[in-house]
Image (cartoon, rainbow, N blue to C red; front, side):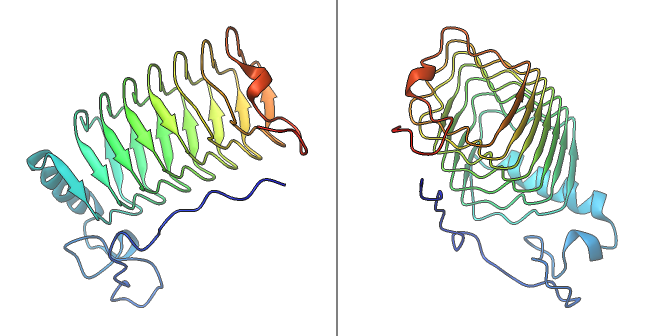
Length: 207
């Protein structure tokens, strides 16, 4: 049985929401997105901060909504975007390490030519997005809903799609060595020219 991917969740500061709801507060705010007086203004404040930085570290922005934002050419280290929403956002040529997007929603976003390692997209909803030409190493897509996405020409070494629901998506000419698809539902998925013999589709297979 494969061991789970492990991430150091202590990288970003865990400040509890002052409203006592148990959620994490947004960086620079005493409360979470659910208790913010103006969540849109909080999201804009976070965007302004990101655009002013080359490298963003230990940022807490869970539950915020981002639309038509250019996050490309930025670096993210130890950031928390759990339950956030991203629509028509660009992450082209971005670098990300040890960051969390669990239960987040992505629609029409572009992660192409990015270097993404040790991230978690657990149970995220990812629709009409592209990850083409990217390094996607040690990524957790466990339980994610992936629809009409493109991972072509990418390196997915040792990433996990366990229990993911994958529809109409392409993994053409990808490195899927030790990539785990155990119990993933796959409909209309193309692995053309990818090394699927080195991927893991069933328990007991050697990756």
